[in-house]
Image 1 (cartoon, one colour):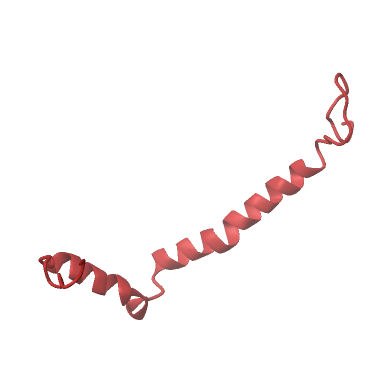
Image 2 (image 1 turned 90 degrees about the vertical axis):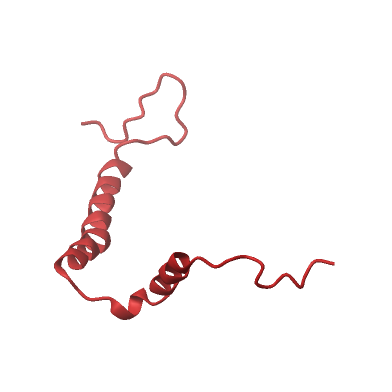
Length: 77
């Protein structure tokens, strides 16, 4: 019943060109200053900042077995 309709849609050359470019983009990749900056920010700086923020706040609050009215501060400062 459904089938035999191959080629019933007109292909758009711009879409086909974009698809070809997208599939082969890794072949034309070069380490430019912008790519190095993005890689360093994404793989070094951001994880380091995130780890530092989490490590700083992890021991700051203690939610374990707290009752109403008890302070949440983990370590008194």
